[in-house]
Image (cartoon, rainbow, N blue to C red; front, top):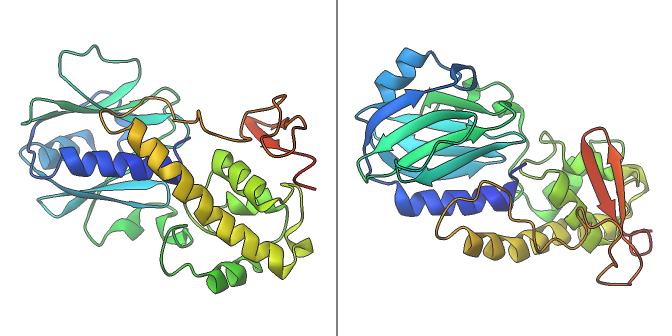
Length: 269
């Protein structure tokens, strides 16, 4: 699942390629993913031009000359593809925008779980659950004090709270593993057992992890949008059985449902 650092790299890439580029043709190949009628989508997109791209939580927000916003929530397997029109279309290509730059912007989703909305600027609250999101994890308004205050409103295991988009938006399974590892906090710890010092450490570890991961992903994304997440540098996530980079003990992977949780039993007591 694309998370905050992945989407930040995608945002940066799109802002280098799209502003001012016009959409010559819009094709909806799998209408279920597009949350507006196909005819309305095509009529609005064709002839329109791109503005800037921003991000809120796990949503990419691509602004258009007409005053609309293309809001993309990729969910587990959705990916944007920026490629020449001659490139063979991949399975489950849901949308193709043919651009005046001579490229295609495509949306591919092998699980068909993602959602694409087209709303007016100022109408993002119309998107289901958008208004219920907590502050973005990189928002300047999310100070250490605000983080701690919001955290106190939630109960349960700290891993589940970090991935709850109503707490803060943008963190998923992979980066919650990395943040908890850097903070030296076990993912099964109950929020109520965390000391004030551990809460401060958690907040600072979140920023440290994003500051570390962001440039690595942006470097890997500078020439093209990858169809898989860039995860080669992860220290614990899906590293089960490998030695911990800090203590040398083996990292543990635990599968819960469709999610793999990874941590070091020695470092994260």
